[in-house]
Length: 244
Image 1 (cartoon, one colour):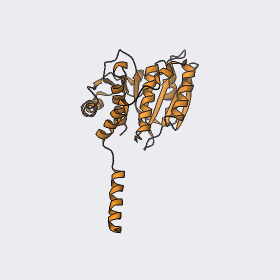
Image 2 (cartoon, rainbow, N blue to C red):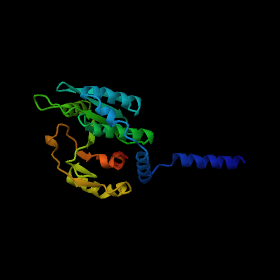
Image 3 (cartoon, rainbow, N blue to C red):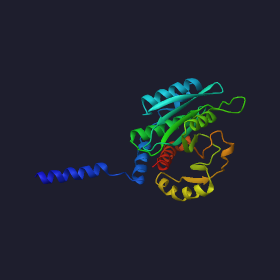
Image 4 (tube, helix red, strand yellow):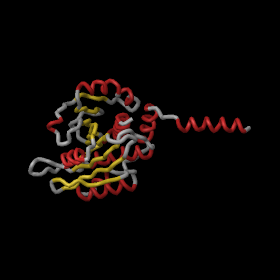
């Protein structure tokens, strides 16, 4: 009897420690958003930009598991950064959105909620950045301020996932402003993981980091209100895959 109990405990331990595959995690993400209603966009839209920062900070720290949050001041406006530490130190992923886009702000909150609700572990630390579009007389804004702060602290960002609700971007497509040699492999490997969610694509964009205020590759994606649950699933899935 004792031997049988020990065997059962060993099996349960193995089951508990089994690593979830990317395919299983993406299935969980899709199921999660199939049950979700938009709890954030309407609330975000009710506030003017500076009050919007206060609301976002409260939600991220109180409800969505951010470990830390702070503001950046640039051109007389405050932007917000919320931190989700990863399993490895020194490398960051930026999940960014302009504060003047309530639907996209709500989408980033939904991604953070999915990571919290599904207990998704990630390798890189993730910074959720809600930035002001305002610039100073030198043409600098909060993206340049964050770039300066990261460099001063010796931190390195691998890439920035830029979320919007713009209709100028192609539907169901992640546009990679990334080195062509690096993105070729991503264009080959990542789409099959997104296939169960829908017909999502990755496309090569432009790569001119010297012209950007935040000098990291940018992966741009627009969330469409007509297909928001699938778009949020795809956005969350890609964020997971890039930090797996």
